Amino acid sequence: MTVGTEETRLIVLRGNSASGKSTVAAGLRDRFGRGLAIVGQDNLRRVVLRERDRPGAANIGLIDTVARYALDAGYHVVVEGILYADRYGGMLTRLRADHRGPAHAYYLHVPFEETLARHATKPDLVDVTERDLRSWYRPLDLLPDATETVIDAASSLPETVDRIMRETGLAGLGALESRRGSGLTLPTSDSA
Image (tube, rainbow, N blue to C red; front, side, top):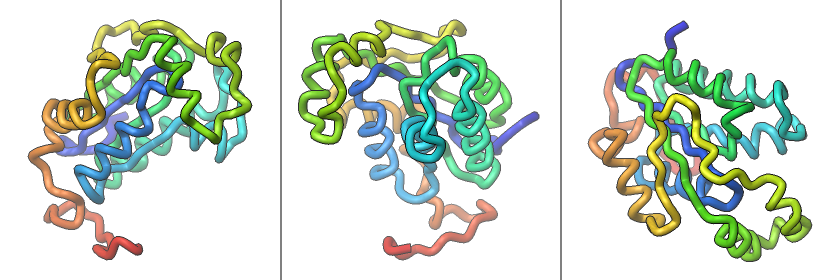
């Protein structure tokens, strides 16, 4: 079942906890503007479903459904999360194969010591222990189809956002309200 259009972009951002996935996704949206949907694993799994991350969990299908819906509505989509290869790999492979437009996958690789240091700066995660982080951490948990570009911790946020904007072609596209013929009508006010 094909999804999206030849113009829509699908971007997958994966990596361990505190690797910068959500921050990079937000940076991409800030740079691009309206018309870029962020499909966040944490939001759908932890907030919407309040579900533990386990094989075959409902959030896997929900992530797929939301991404497909947004692509079919003419949005560019960033799917971001830890998205362990053994649990989410099949869904991500099918989504990328079904997408009519360009699809790009990035793995943000951060060593465990850096993960630990970054978690220490997040006040909303004070209940997460070093033991928890060690149990979640999987070094270079790459998808088996070898389609991910690895970006290491040496790449700054602006460098990473610039690179993804350039490599995916988002840098040359206009925000949704400035594109003609997208089939969507959105308010142009930032308050909407």
